[in-house]
Image 1 (spheres, rainbow, N blue to C red):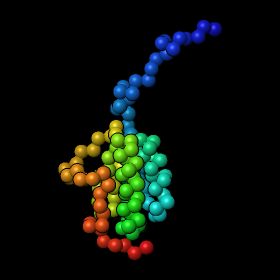
Image 2: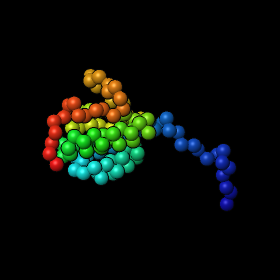
Image 3: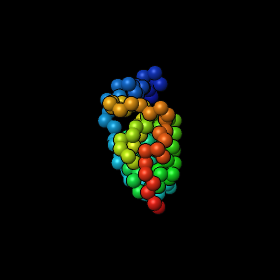
Image 4: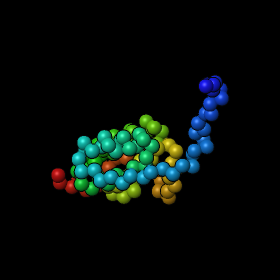
Length: 118
């Protein structure tokens, strides 16, 4: 049996696969500990929409900070959708919005949220 040389093995062309559809995962976070799973989804290059309405402002801010850091680490972005809903996208996904871009990678939520008791 004849073996192929390394130069004859076709290389994977990442640019040719840029048009692959990305998976979108919508996840409601009920506890801060559930953030790890959401971060793993983002690291796997999935679009993650987080609904944080079950968390207090402080806990939700912690989740958004961790997720925004994870998005930043993979050169992705964070977008605010509604009061306690955010979308985190990897770098191969482009989001177009009429809203202005946040001034920091992780938006400060305490000014726009009312406190929800635990």
